[in-house]
Amino acid sequence: MRPQIFGRGANLLARLSIFGLVFSLLALAVAALLLVRSPWATGQGTPVVQTVPFSHKHHVGDDGIDCRYCHTSVEQSSFAGLPPTQTCMNCHSQIWAQSPMLEPVRQSFQTGQPLEWQRVHVLGDFVYFDHSIHVQKGIGCSTCHGQVDQMPLMWKAASLQMSWCLECHRNPERYVRPREEVFNMSWQPPPNQDELGARLVQEYHIQSKTSCSTCHR
Image 1 (spheres, rainbow, N blue to C red):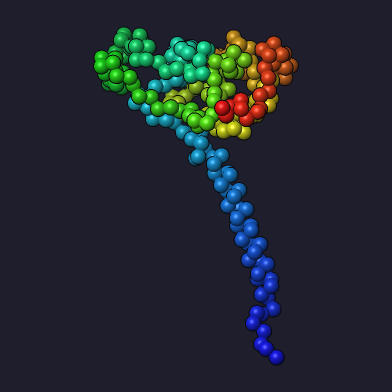
Image 2: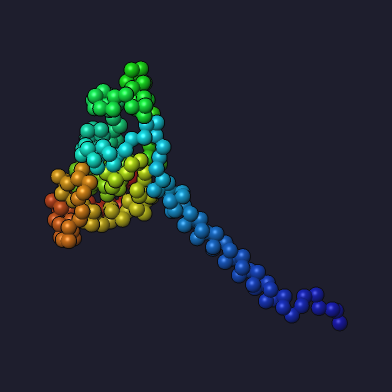
């Protein structure tokens, strides 16, 4: 009689090993999914360092400057636009004209070399986004960009991942607001938002666009 090579617990050990391997692979997959959706990966909530530490809190919240004063093309173009140095100098040739912090602005104005601003909300090249259509349909700036009037430095308020975009595209009545309130940072959904949103969806002819070709062209 030949001796037994494997002990009585070999089958149990093999089963546990297989179960452990499968569990480990599933755990790694879940961890990866959570990681790519985490603020660490998306940059959500992390202030972006700029050449000039521009404060939306000061300019929008304290001084009440309208978004369109700097982002001039937001109502007509896919790109909201970045202000030329001349826009900054309209005020800063008189106010804080000698501030050391604004030296890059003065240098840009004198040399004609544009300031290099770092993009905060960056979408992949495979994504098409049009600011103007969202403005026309009553989607407020703060819906995507957050309360910029409270941001000393600009950061990404939302993940901008596809699942986040689809939440609005599938349920636009929850997020739409009157067009005249699009640039109002203090606007809050009223208690009857469901009723208001449903009416505005009809009035603004908003379609629940969720097909791939809507954003991936």
